[in-house]
Image (cartoon, rainbow, N blue to C red; front, top):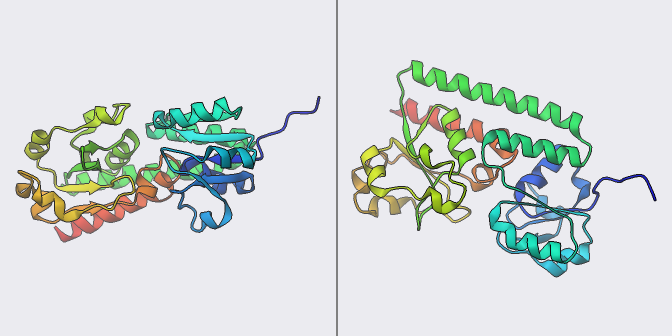
Length: 269
């Protein structure tokens, strides 16, 4: 018997764990990443790609001999089951809210004995959250009340997942479908078309899970040409590596990105 050792050969099936390990200075533990990993810049030059979100190269994973595989969400349950059947250690998280994102990051930090380093990171994130709240108060004081429609997928339409919706509202916007955001499954976030049109959002934030957003397609939808956001061309494509990654990017860049977007919009109105 030997003293216990921490995981030192980690495969990240999704982007957020890989980015966090880099922020913690623990990137040398990573031996495999997702094809969607874009943060930090150049990450794919440093590690082999072993997966996309919905499937993984099981044999390649085995050849790499990981001692821990980290994934995310119910969508990866079949991947997780197959990897477990092959004898691998698999950790799947299902975090959805911003608080759960922070809790998840704390868990990953503890797995690599980086708690003290994470404390410094989370202090920065909490200050960023306070900055977003101050911006939201300033918007209100200036008389701005902006309704937003968040679209995570076009066909079928899917509204913003919990952390995406929550981040948007943190920055002073009103998500017209916030009542759907706690839906655990994507099918529980199918918005009502009539309700969207009746709500007449001031802007549309689209982020189609890695697929290029077709901005012109919104005006072609039945009844949508009358929306303020469509008439005024207030339709924005957001980067999925920031807004559909339930991890550090939300705080590292997401808040600044939204504040800059809203400031630009309100200045021109």
